[in-house]
Length: 125
Image 1 (cartoon, helix red, strand yellow):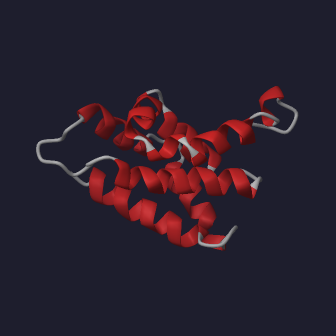
Image 2: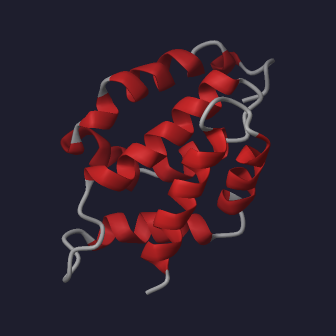
């Protein structure tokens, strides 16, 4: 959000709760992902606030291990559809990951590369 937006003050608090508590539990993250949470996290990666950007990227990275994305047949096609939805041009997912090239915080480019590699491996089918 822009700094003038009323949510700008509460956004770090809610993201902090998601980052520290919710991201470790499949039963909490599944509804988040299905409600568009991946798109929201992708939109936070290029945020000027490095705390928000790092928590968004680390949460995305954590989601790669939380679900069995590569099950055959897929355990949850809806989750896969949400992950594939990051390819939509209005999301800007790859562009957001490219913003991590300049190492905005420790481990930024490595995490972004891991997320990108996972995502490309998943959507290539």
